[in-house]
Amino acid sequence: MQPQTQTVATRSGKYLPRLVSGENPGLAKHITIFGELVAVWREVEQRYDTKIEVFEGPRPEELAATHGERLWETKPDLYLAIAKVEPLNRALMDLDCWITGIRRDQAPTRANAPKLAWDDASLYVGFQVDDPDVIGGFAKDAKDPHLWNKDTVEIMIDPDGDGDNVDYYEIQVNPQNLVFDTQYDMYNSPKTEPAGPFGHQEWSAKLKSAVVVHGTLDKPGDKDKGYTVEAAIPWSSFTKAKNHPPKGGDEWRMNFYAMKNNSGVSWSPILGQGNFHKASRFGKVLWATADMPAPAASASAAPAGSDALGASSAAGMARARAAMSGALGRPPVPKPAGSAAPKP
Image: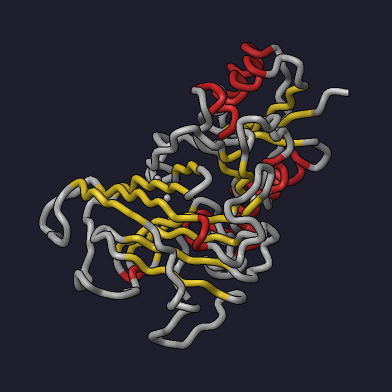
């Protein structure tokens, strides 16, 4: 029996059905589009000779009656949970797997989506952050400075993949190429308020990183474009992980943030279920090798409202398929190449 696949489509919804149809003609395709996107809705039905099933949340007037006017502005996490996550959960209830993705050119909040690759030696991470006023703000020789209070990118890693916050890692790199890295035993623990230490700051990621500022650093009078961060993190640093490097098919929990003044954007939203350390809200990353079959159901394992991530594999279309199915591909010659909730 063919698996039933769902493509969740937004304004770029026509791209994922094309990918599924072109590469997997035997799959049953069940396509869901958020109801307000009528033009995409009709185009997909006509092009792929399919019927769109619509899952809707409460109408604006119903939301206003129960939660007040303009909920998307006053409580955006609650709005997303009610208007998009809950309808999506209904849509996914009886499916074998689902496929989704984002495009970096869709919105400023998506322009910072991270890029990943890996080999036997290291994890490679890249961020492209859009920021009109790039700030460093720390002494050049600062050791584990609190980078989240200015501008920084951040990586959270829970190698077990179970989201229980046992033995997880935090790594930050700012536009000055300064690093904050630490390891935690449990959720936000150990921690000493207000000035730290936070976690086991004696731990070192032993990473190699490079930063390019597209503009001028610490000059608020002009307009910058942003900054790029690339890092190679050796697997040997993740001593708490069961497998380091991971084996093909292993699944880790990870999240990525672009921070500014102790706030920012995240790859996988926390949705009010804790702070940005909450591993159960991290996205799921499946470590894939070239000899592995396409992980058709991997994306379905991600928590509602979170993301499953893919990155480059050996060839162009294989790269796209890996990304859409939630697999992190393993390229033969990896090259690093881009995306927060408030700090506790």
